[in-house]
Amino acid sequence: MSTLTEAPPPLSPPAPEDKPPRKRGRWTPYWLLLPGILWLVVFFAAPMIYQASTSVQTGSLEEGYRVTWHFVTYWDAVSEYWPQFLRSVAYAASATVLCLLLGYPLAYLIAFRAGRWRNLIMILVIAPFFTSFLIRTLAWKTILADGGPVVGALNTLHVLDVTSWLGWTAGDRVLATPLAVVCGLTYNFLPFMILPLYTSLERIDGRLHEAAGDLYAKPSTVFRKVTFPLSMPGVVSGTLLTFIPATGDYVNASLLGSADTGMIGNVIQSQFLRVLDYPTAAALSFILMAAILAMVTFYIRKSGTEDLV
Amino acid sequence: MAFVNWCKRNLVVIAGLLTLAYLVLPNVIVTVFSFNKPNGRFNYEWQQFSTDAWKDPCGVSGLCGSLSLSLQIAFWATLGATALGTAIAFALVRYRFRARGAINSLIFLPMAMPEVVMAASLLTLFLNMGAQLGFWTVLTAHIMFCLSFVVTAVKARVMSMDPRLEQAAQDLYAGPFQTFVRVTLPIAAPGIAAGALLAFALSFDDFIITNFNAGSTVTFPMFVWGSAQRGTPVQINVVGTAMFVIAVLFVLASMVIGDRRNRRKA
Image (cartoon, rainbow over all chains, first blue to last red; front, side, top):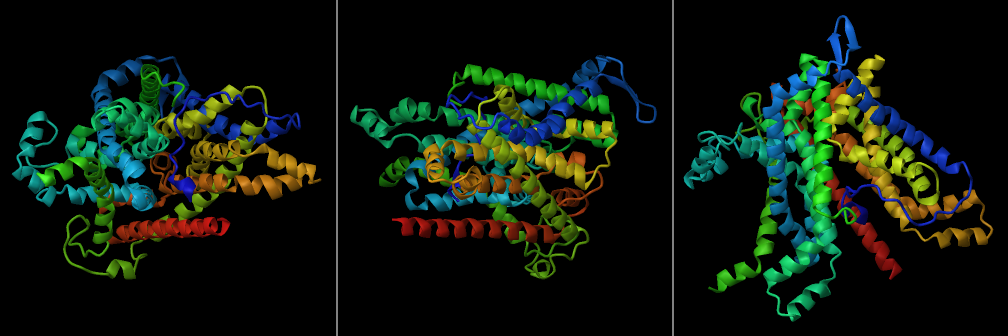
């Protein structure tokens, strides 16, 4: 089960393997690849093209759709739904930062300070995965309930006054506000941050810490100059594994938010499954995909860890 | 002052444990509320202790049906994704061929794409093909998104394999088939098992892609989603708690077995 405690596959741009693989049957690799790759081409790549073509079609459900290169759909979609786009990015970014702030100490604890408790803590991080995340998200409705202990405590400490003033909560409610949605997103994607962080922290040679200490570095300096830089690969893949799914999520915004906290996922879902306006929905989904790919590429370049991820 | 110093030294531990509490709290709530007897349709407020739901977990219409459907889909999706993914992983590690970069990107992209984008584009394909949404479209979609995770898990294991072991087997007159079954497969097994387990968990818990491509078919996550609108029966907490307990026992058991095996080796 050691494999379970490993990080989920790191998000890394495909790197060419430089190990010279042996040659046996000339056609064997193609036969091995064929079924799986065909599956991905037909059910992953081809749908992307279908979606792009759907987004420039016009027509109606009754008369059918035809490609008319109707690019105005994109303009209309953006001008109508830009608040949801901005909200998605803002919520996902806040959740990612919170995940990093909350997840780092726990990953550090598991890697360096847990001792014989390491396995138990690891189980507690992973096991919630096996309970349906919808049920766990619904539990937040109980935790953040109006008049519940959490809201009561925040009220007594006047925290809610500050967050209301900032527009994160409304009155003395937490449910159905941006804070509840960000809280749910943070909760749902926290393990995706902790596991890669743990993997990269665990690889650090403990002697480096000792060496830094021997050279009169304060514990905070050791962290800033040694531990954190060496954990960068984990930070990069953790933030990507959190940010990407959080941007497209609509479950938290639906269950814990209100009509005013709708994210772009909510719009795509309702356009596709309720309004049945396929061109608009396809255009929105295409923009989301392009935006995420652009942001991720920029982020990987900027963080300069292209070959480290 | 001593206390403040102690806190300072163990700041990381305290912060880490608080995060752990944040992670585990919802599971505690789910468990506690599986013993609730709610007033009304929603199970969000504590009323009184009762074991009714545990005595009758299938008491809500549709729940156990959706659970068994989810298990079936997860089973077949795991089988399909593991078979296809293992083959790809072996081809990637063991052979040299054209279009390697393109194939690597094709495997990497589904993991870097928000689920809602894959879900929506797949739905446009199914609508264009005129496919009947239901069991088969969901299974197809699940195999698609589990595949990349299986490839990554198996690839990691096969790459760390010592190729000399297979050469040794062949030097000892084992045929290609015998080498594969007696040497290669047993060594790759932990990677394949990890990939399969991941695929099962991903498929069983998937909501977004299923929501788009299921039509009127109801899997367990879809049932929970629907009940969040209509009224949450206590039984979904029973199922959630049972899943948590089974998962923890499963992990503990495999740890004990692994421990014993290590000790026997030593």
